[in-house]
Image 1: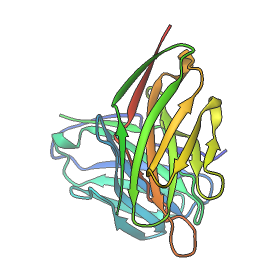
Image 2: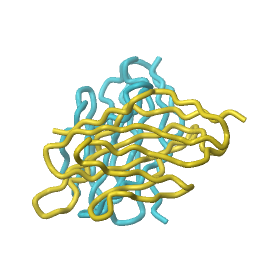
Image 3: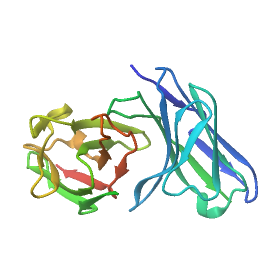
Image 4: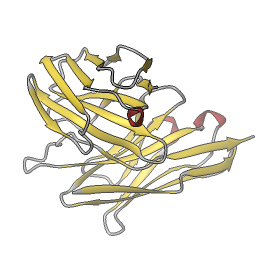
Length: 112
Length: 118
Protein backbone atom coordinates (compact mmCIF):
# COMPACT_ATOMS: atom_id res chain seq x y z
CA UNK A 1 0.00 0.00 0.00
CA UNK A 2 1.03 3.55 -0.68
CA UNK A 3 1.97 5.37 2.44
CA UNK A 4 2.01 9.13 2.78
CA UNK A 5 3.35 10.20 6.14
CA UNK A 6 3.08 13.64 7.64
CA UNK A 7 5.58 14.28 10.39
CA UNK A 8 3.15 15.72 12.93
CA UNK A 9 -0.55 15.17 13.66
CA UNK A 10 -0.85 18.26 15.84
CA UNK A 11 1.26 21.41 16.04
CA UNK A 12 0.92 24.57 18.07
CA UNK A 13 3.06 27.52 16.99
CA UNK A 14 3.29 31.17 17.88
CA UNK A 15 2.52 34.05 15.57
CA UNK A 16 5.59 35.03 13.58
CA UNK A 17 7.34 31.67 13.88
CA UNK A 18 8.70 29.89 10.82
CA UNK A 19 6.89 26.57 10.54
CA UNK A 20 7.87 23.47 8.59
CA UNK A 21 5.37 20.75 7.71
CA UNK A 22 6.97 17.61 6.35
CA UNK A 23 5.50 14.96 4.08
CA UNK A 24 7.12 11.73 2.89
CA UNK A 25 5.75 9.17 0.42
CA UNK A 26 7.14 5.72 -0.20
CA UNK A 27 5.87 4.91 -3.71
CA UNK A 28 8.23 6.91 -5.91
CA UNK A 29 5.41 9.19 -7.02
CA UNK A 30 6.31 12.14 -9.18
CA UNK A 31 3.49 14.45 -8.09
CA UNK A 32 3.04 15.76 -4.58
CA UNK A 33 0.52 18.26 -3.25
CA UNK A 34 -0.24 20.38 -0.21
CA UNK A 35 -3.86 21.19 0.56
CA UNK A 36 -5.45 23.21 3.30
CA UNK A 37 -8.79 22.05 4.73
CA UNK A 38 -11.21 24.43 6.42
CA UNK A 39 -14.82 23.80 7.45
CA UNK A 40 -17.25 24.75 4.72
CA UNK A 41 -14.45 25.40 2.23
CA UNK A 42 -13.36 21.87 1.46
CA UNK A 43 -9.75 21.37 0.45
CA UNK A 44 -7.84 24.10 -1.33
CA UNK A 45 -4.56 23.57 -3.15
CA UNK A 46 -1.62 25.54 -1.78
CA UNK A 47 1.30 24.24 -3.88
CA UNK A 48 2.17 21.20 -5.88
CA UNK A 49 5.31 19.66 -7.28
CA UNK A 50 5.67 17.39 -10.29
CA UNK A 51 9.38 16.66 -9.94
CA UNK A 52 12.33 17.29 -7.69
CA UNK A 53 12.98 21.02 -7.33
CA UNK A 54 9.92 21.78 -9.46
CA UNK A 55 6.94 23.53 -7.94
CA UNK A 56 3.86 25.42 -8.98
CA UNK A 57 1.49 27.62 -7.09
CA UNK A 58 -1.95 26.37 -6.36
CA UNK A 59 -5.01 28.42 -5.55
CA UNK A 60 -3.91 29.90 -2.21
CA UNK A 61 -0.08 30.16 -2.14
CA UNK A 62 0.16 33.46 -0.27
CA UNK A 63 2.08 33.13 2.99
CA UNK A 64 3.47 29.70 2.06
CA UNK A 65 6.46 28.28 0.28
CA UNK A 66 7.55 24.72 -0.47
CA UNK A 67 10.68 22.68 -0.90
CA UNK A 68 11.27 19.44 -2.74
CA UNK A 69 14.93 18.44 -2.64
CA UNK A 70 14.24 14.71 -2.82
CA UNK A 71 11.54 12.88 -4.72
CA UNK A 72 9.97 11.33 -1.66
CA UNK A 73 9.80 14.46 0.48
CA UNK A 74 7.72 17.60 0.07
CA UNK A 75 7.86 20.32 2.70
CA UNK A 76 5.44 23.15 3.30
CA UNK A 77 6.90 26.27 4.90
CA UNK A 78 5.03 29.03 6.65
CA UNK A 79 7.52 31.86 6.55
CA UNK A 80 5.88 33.83 9.37
CA UNK A 81 2.92 32.03 10.85
CA UNK A 82 -0.28 33.98 11.37
CA UNK A 83 -3.48 33.08 13.17
CA UNK A 84 -5.38 32.85 9.87
CA UNK A 85 -3.14 29.93 8.95
CA UNK A 86 -4.66 27.85 11.72
CA UNK A 87 -6.04 24.92 9.77
CA UNK A 88 -5.77 21.26 8.82
CA UNK A 89 -3.02 20.63 6.26
CA UNK A 90 -3.12 17.56 4.04
CA UNK A 91 -0.34 16.22 1.88
CA UNK A 92 -1.02 13.97 -1.11
CA UNK A 93 0.98 12.13 -3.73
CA UNK A 94 0.14 10.75 -7.15
CA UNK A 95 2.03 8.85 -9.81
CA UNK A 96 2.52 10.67 -13.09
CA UNK A 97 -0.28 9.95 -15.55
CA UNK A 98 -2.44 8.25 -12.96
CA UNK A 99 -5.63 9.54 -11.43
CA UNK A 100 -5.67 8.49 -7.80
CA UNK A 101 -4.20 10.73 -5.13
CA UNK A 102 -3.10 9.23 -1.83
CA UNK A 103 -3.43 11.38 1.25
CA UNK A 104 -1.58 11.60 4.52
CA UNK A 105 -3.36 11.74 7.87
CA UNK A 106 -3.16 15.50 8.07
CA UNK A 107 -1.48 17.99 10.38
CA UNK A 108 -3.73 20.15 12.50
CA UNK A 109 -1.84 23.41 12.97
CA UNK A 110 -2.87 25.98 15.55
CA UNK A 111 -1.18 29.38 15.49
CA UNK A 112 -1.58 31.34 18.71
CA UNK B 1 -11.00 26.32 -14.92
CA UNK B 2 -12.82 23.81 -12.76
CA UNK B 3 -15.20 23.99 -9.86
CA UNK B 4 -17.30 21.64 -7.76
CA UNK B 5 -20.49 22.33 -5.87
CA UNK B 6 -21.82 19.92 -3.29
CA UNK B 7 -25.44 20.57 -2.47
CA UNK B 8 -26.03 20.33 1.25
CA UNK B 9 -23.28 20.72 3.81
CA UNK B 10 -25.08 18.30 6.14
CA UNK B 11 -27.20 15.27 5.25
CA UNK B 12 -28.93 13.16 7.87
CA UNK B 13 -30.45 9.74 7.19
CA UNK B 14 -31.74 6.82 9.20
CA UNK B 15 -29.88 3.55 9.25
CA UNK B 16 -31.10 1.46 6.31
CA UNK B 17 -32.28 4.46 4.31
CA UNK B 18 -31.02 5.60 0.93
CA UNK B 19 -27.98 7.85 0.93
CA UNK B 20 -27.83 10.53 -1.78
CA UNK B 21 -25.04 13.10 -1.80
CA UNK B 22 -25.18 15.59 -4.62
CA UNK B 23 -22.27 16.92 -6.65
CA UNK B 24 -22.23 19.21 -9.67
CA UNK B 25 -19.08 20.23 -11.47
CA UNK B 26 -17.84 22.53 -14.16
CA UNK B 27 -14.80 21.85 -16.27
CA UNK B 28 -13.40 23.28 -19.48
CA UNK B 29 -11.82 19.94 -20.37
CA UNK B 30 -13.12 16.36 -20.07
CA UNK B 31 -13.25 15.70 -16.36
CA UNK B 32 -12.08 12.98 -14.10
CA UNK B 33 -14.44 12.82 -11.12
CA UNK B 34 -13.88 11.45 -7.65
CA UNK B 35 -15.57 10.90 -4.33
CA UNK B 36 -13.42 10.80 -1.22
CA UNK B 37 -14.44 10.02 2.36
CA UNK B 38 -12.87 11.39 5.50
CA UNK B 39 -13.47 9.78 8.87
CA UNK B 40 -12.81 11.89 11.98
CA UNK B 41 -9.15 12.80 12.47
CA UNK B 42 -8.07 10.92 9.38
CA UNK B 43 -6.93 11.72 5.89
CA UNK B 44 -8.99 11.23 2.74
CA UNK B 45 -9.73 7.82 1.30
CA UNK B 46 -10.86 7.28 -2.28
CA UNK B 47 -14.39 5.86 -2.53
CA UNK B 48 -14.69 5.74 -6.30
CA UNK B 49 -13.71 7.51 -9.49
CA UNK B 50 -14.90 8.11 -13.01
CA UNK B 51 -12.30 8.46 -15.74
CA UNK B 52 -13.66 7.05 -18.99
CA UNK B 53 -16.05 4.32 -20.07
CA UNK B 54 -19.04 3.22 -18.05
CA UNK B 55 -20.80 6.16 -16.50
CA UNK B 56 -22.05 4.20 -13.49
CA UNK B 57 -19.12 3.48 -11.25
CA UNK B 58 -19.04 1.33 -8.16
CA UNK B 59 -16.79 1.94 -5.23
CA UNK B 60 -15.98 0.59 -1.84
CA UNK B 61 -18.46 0.05 0.99
CA UNK B 62 -21.45 -0.29 -1.36
CA UNK B 63 -21.30 3.24 -2.77
CA UNK B 64 -21.81 4.09 -6.41
CA UNK B 65 -22.02 7.23 -8.52
CA UNK B 66 -23.24 8.07 -11.99
CA UNK B 67 -21.55 10.52 -14.32
CA UNK B 68 -24.18 12.54 -16.19
CA UNK B 69 -22.48 14.80 -18.67
CA UNK B 70 -25.68 16.58 -19.73
CA UNK B 71 -26.40 17.50 -16.12
CA UNK B 72 -22.74 18.02 -15.16
CA UNK B 73 -23.44 15.88 -12.12
CA UNK B 74 -21.76 13.05 -10.26
CA UNK B 75 -24.08 12.18 -7.39
CA UNK B 76 -23.09 9.56 -4.82
CA UNK B 77 -25.59 6.95 -3.65
CA UNK B 78 -25.83 3.97 -1.37
CA UNK B 79 -29.04 1.95 -1.13
CA UNK B 80 -28.90 1.32 2.61
CA UNK B 81 -27.01 3.47 5.10
CA UNK B 82 -24.96 1.96 7.88
CA UNK B 83 -23.83 3.64 11.05
CA UNK B 84 -20.24 3.25 9.89
CA UNK B 85 -20.97 5.49 6.88
CA UNK B 86 -21.06 8.56 9.11
CA UNK B 87 -18.21 10.74 7.83
CA UNK B 88 -17.49 13.73 5.64
CA UNK B 89 -17.63 13.20 1.89
CA UNK B 90 -15.86 15.23 -0.73
CA UNK B 91 -16.49 15.38 -4.45
CA UNK B 92 -13.52 16.38 -6.58
CA UNK B 93 -12.64 16.99 -10.22
CA UNK B 94 -9.41 16.99 -12.14
CA UNK B 95 -8.80 17.74 -15.78
CA UNK B 96 -7.47 15.61 -18.59
CA UNK B 97 -4.62 16.89 -20.64
CA UNK B 98 -4.37 16.44 -24.39
CA UNK B 99 -2.79 13.05 -23.96
CA UNK B 100 -5.68 11.79 -21.87
CA UNK B 101 -3.72 11.61 -18.66
CA UNK B 102 -4.58 13.49 -15.54
CA UNK B 103 -3.13 16.85 -14.64
CA UNK B 104 -3.25 15.55 -11.10
CA UNK B 105 -4.53 18.67 -9.42
CA UNK B 106 -7.83 18.10 -7.69
CA UNK B 107 -10.48 20.74 -7.16
CA UNK B 108 -12.72 19.84 -4.24
CA UNK B 109 -16.23 20.67 -3.25
CA UNK B 110 -17.07 22.08 0.15
CA UNK B 111 -17.79 18.69 1.68
CA UNK B 112 -20.96 17.04 2.98
CA UNK B 113 -21.16 15.68 6.50
CA UNK B 114 -23.28 12.54 6.58
CA UNK B 115 -24.99 11.65 9.85
CA UNK B 116 -26.66 8.26 10.24
CA UNK B 117 -29.31 7.85 12.94
CA UNK B 118 -30.19 4.49 14.49
